Image (tube, rainbow over the protein chains, first blue to last red):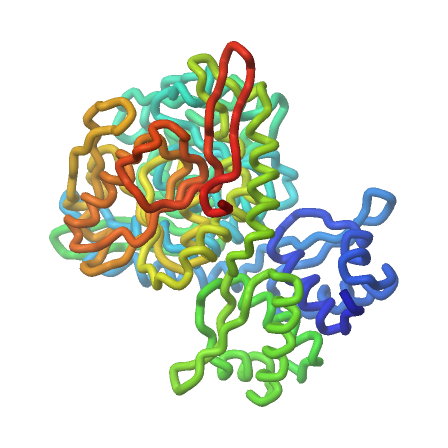
Length: 272
Length: 272
């Protein structure tokens, strides 16, 4: 391949780094691929750093030393979060979303790629510095958001199941009490899924009493691992006393009034 | 914001387009953002086109006319697919993955962001021209792959559940027979999930007899919609006669021999 122009190198650098968030690439990797000196690449990287900062669309981190290189990181930006959350509050407060029983239809939102991507980027940016090993969720509706968070953190996703499955090998099963319904629930996770002494982030779409989050904390103890953070898209205002104290929630659901056809939402706790 | 340099514009163009596959952006959007003429942007776009083609990392499509603009598309490249599939075959043929009962542990693979991303990109590239409206899967293990496929196609993901849920509103439930176990299974999907006359792609991690795929075809009929493609990561060699005829599969599982500790896999049908 012939030598590349600077703007060609910069385009490909941006694509490769941005497509693999939180993944370290050596300058050798690029210098072999682009047939150029590492000093030239360092200049290219500086241009990327400046322009990403200008547009608040992430950061390039340079790691020095023999095992060093560069990586792209999503960055938690309050203004970006505010815009995303306001957009979501607008969409979700549509009274046509009210289901019988006072539930809110939100499945379309949490399965829509651009929205899921934004939420995952926000969660990953917020918890980036915790040096997490896994993102953990429970089937089913939180999986897409958890997957995108895992993508931005560049760590494996782990999905606890409601029952143990023969295709997962031996598993750890725990029982826990749903904080809102007081019913006993089960969750199951393959012994192979999480290594010892891991730090995990629990991600879900919805939290009411926090029973599931508490269940995940218990489950992780069985793997000698700890939950370092809890991130949910929506938490309910009531009960105010939840089973877990520390969590972030993009949106707080105050009330769904089926008779008055009103959905009362507000931006969540990380914007206060 | 001051005027940008060409290499800064090219970096941001690449990032924004590549972060939103199959999403059309007008040149106006960029010209306002970057404070430059549309003719200048056209030149920038041409540079991106050339370099992406050179590295076989996707394509930029220019749509002419008043509603026109540019978008980034993943491209199905046999060499890229071959490398991804060979890597996966290597990982999966590790005899430590054999579970009692002759099952293969593959959950870690289908939840790992970089692998899931590659698979989603391949599936999306293969079906890009079908102009699909949704990617459909059934809970649980296929969800991450389906999500990434949906991201690259820029269409909503739809997840059929095993039971109907109160948070999904009124739903359509169907019964179908698992082709391998002959057991009756149920799947359920919210009435709101799929619009009439939609074209969908069914994505799953694993296919044996094809009963689930057949079930999805039946389910989509209830929504007056059609399954235009079926994509699975792994299909089994036996039964050779599956319930569905047309599908793509990245890997074919010939045999898991629990006693001899052998996993016999080969690259799948789209590479033949």
